[in-house]
Image (cartoon, rainbow over all chains, first blue to last red; front, side, top):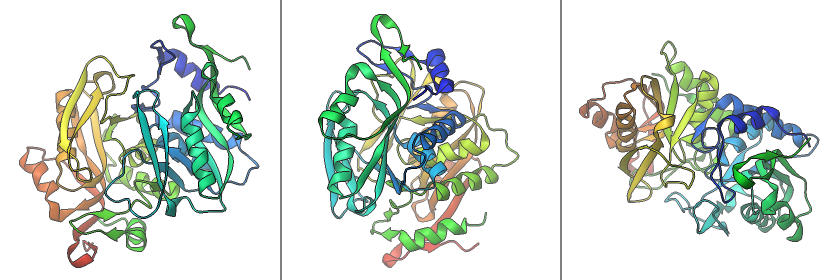
Length: 196
Length: 196
């Protein structure tokens, strides 16, 4: 699928390659947010999954929240975000998966109250990055545990060189994966996007 | 100011009083989100600050993000959310404050990169709850540290019995504080809203 050019331009203007495959785009994704740009992401995400029945969106805190909520606004469906630390208000049965955090260097929990991930729903999974794919695989497992169906996965930025798409496929998730922008290389300090 | 009735009704329908002043509304605020209801909150928040010049919104992760982003969407201004754990992508000077977490039982850091809180701006502070007021006071201090101006504070739910509004005033923040809904008592398992 074509790149979302408005996003690609902003990443080129504001993003920084910190090495080791780490892309600093906290000016537009996970510290500061431009709501109009984020709304554009939500509209583009909804367009990528046009024609699919979607009952609910699942994402993970923290950086997944904004793109998921704006996609949910366009699609008019509820959004649930997996918590990483159990809040005092969470009780009753939960779905629990773990995934390594790319930017925190440790394994994190992903927790969703069972009441917010009911069975027999068509669930779209949204997240900020598709890197190694392990967070997305954990979210996909949750949807399966809930006996619901995965419509597909939508991410803001895919880094193809970290193999996440392949991990999803090898893990049995042969589902549509849509990336608003796709980065094919961050070698030598560069940020190289896929050609359309 | 009048209560946001659509929100009050949803809290009465879905909220649970867990005792000790803890209100479980994770079905609509901090685990699951109904984007249309959240958009209504953003519109109402923007209306409450109509006529004020607002350059930027400041909130705190995690539960502040959704209401802040939708308020920012209506006002067409950038949103910055204070991080609680320093991500690997954060470097350079930061504003740092601490505040006790109501639901985690410990002191948490609030970190904002200086580049996303520039001087001489009119900043609206948004958060999910006004309880003891300590998180909001920490955010207000950050705006002052940045040599910007605080337009006011907007919260989704105020619990008047925890004294946050008074703490803000006693701390020298004599600014408009708007609450979409105001809860005056949670004694005896009830949830009592302020009369309009």
